[in-house]
Image (cartoon, rainbow, N blue to C red; front, side, top):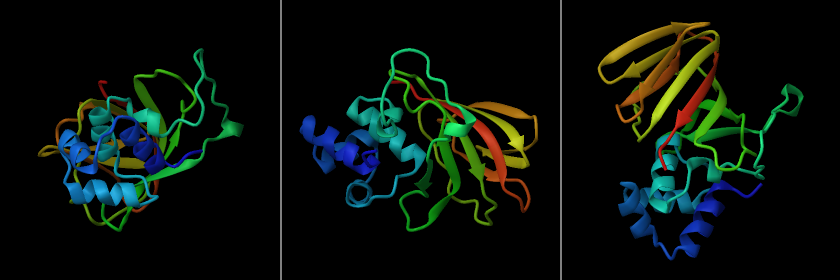
Length: 187
């Protein structure tokens, strides 16, 4: 699988987009874009969505391995590799590990993931991006910080929200939680 940063570089080169142009189009700082282009780590999900919009592609383009036109079945035994997005372009790793459930599906508009959310003590790294998110708690508990609100969800609970509002999802308590997350980002 080609690294996310390599796919971004290839798309930029093919569209003759400089780091400065990409930063302006994505609403990021030039130093953030340069850090993404020089690193093998995957940027935060919010940054990746903004970069996708600036390049005119869907966010899944960066995570796709191969694409199928028809239905894509993902078997439990064929689990996809886990992706950990970096936390807001800092040196810290994110507290979430994502496993894509449809990486091979061509032309999709939604990004379904199984996400393991590790407990963290810091809750300052809110994100926002265009689109919507749906989260369903499979194991454990989560806390969703959404704007000025705080929602605690237990196993079996779900939440659907506009992701343009600042938000942060953390594990509820000291145990890792597992959720089904579906991210929709308009093209």
